[in-house]
Figure 1 (spheres, helix red, strand yellow):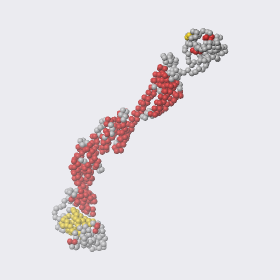
Figure 2 (cartoon, one colour):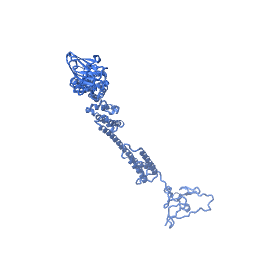
Figure 3 (cartoon, helix red, strand yellow):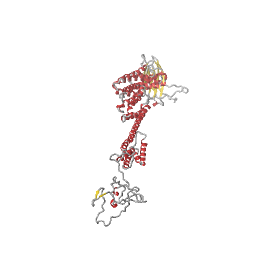
Figure 4 (tube, helix red, strand yellow):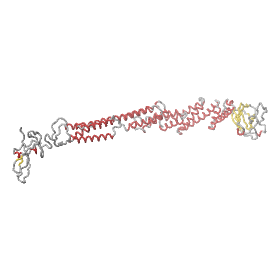
Length: 618
């Protein structure tokens, strides 16, 4: 079988000219500098499969040798043959002879490919590692993305914690950088082999892969946008929930007293204010004006129900809303409470006049009306309402009142209210009310006397005389007080009122003497009423008591000289009289109240001796 002839390489003959250098042949077709010959390139220098030094090239070996031993191609001048043709292509550095391992061939760097892998890793899906078939790194990317989704979903008001976002962002950047590093020289197959790009040597599919990687960046961007929209919706819903909670607070206390509901109103109003100002662009913020209108209707329910006293505080609160809530949110509500508040002040104040415990309330309500809305139609009606309140009650004192004592009590309350109103306007009404109270006090004492409530009548009339000493009714009030005091001991004395004026005609003389220790007071009532006080008799003594069963001896009082006894003279019209002797206990063992009855007839003079006896006759 034909094959290359084996030639043994051996050194040049020793008879070579001394000093001659071993010259290497030059490039093909060049002329040797020594003899002018053209030297062909040596196969081991440029041909395929050449090696440096004792490398082996591919060729037929000696029989039985095959590819076992390296074949050395002799230089053309050693064999004396013709010069071989030049190689068909440049030498490939790092290639090895078939059948023998050679050094690794470094791949050409590909920046576009590095960019592709980095961009794919930025897609949050680790696609760059998938392209590189680096599955562990891809799994790490997937795990990081899943963890972020677990933290982020479902979207809420607080969103993703900043630390998680920063950490994930740094992780993506690290994954992109690592992917770019790995993909710079990685042998990637992007699809079926195609023509190389001019001057780049990369397959034509790369030009489509890069735009696709950029498009895949829309995955995290779109996810961020979708998450932002979901979080915005969560925020909107949280605002709507807060708005609904505020509405519930208002509805829960509708119709209750303002004092008990004030805390709910305060919280709801704070929520409306915050949503309407700090979150005005939200759906909840845009609903705040309507909610405030509903708030106004809810708070003003007592006014709509004509509970004017209960409506005052809520309406004052509504009138002050511009100081608590942004005015721009109070569409149609500013000043709306003025007229209802004026009416409530008027109705509450006038209806409270004369009521127990409401004296100051009535005055405060009416004063507030006169001060806050002096030009209001309701303010101009206050004076007439107060005057009517006084005159209506005073009119009943002429006899139509069932109980003048109750009426005068109401008039006193009216007076307290009137005294709280501006003096320059209500001085005359205060004086008119005072006259009605005086009349009521007198009529109250009269009623008590007629009802045989002598103790109360005595107290009322005594106070009347003290309070109104210059009154034209003072004298009769004094007489009624005396008659009531006598009637406490002798009820018959209260059979009728003492007359308001003394009767005319003749009067009988009654001389009253004190024949006992201590000062004595004598009260009498009949056609006329009065009292006299006799001084103590210094030489008088107490007479022994008289018991009918043991001692029939009568007491002989006032038998001494007339000058001995303190005296008082009474001029009494004829008629029946009730007397009450009242002696102080300071000079006796006990207080002495002794009642008696005497008939005074015309044409007679009378004496009345007052003395003291011991209780048991000792």
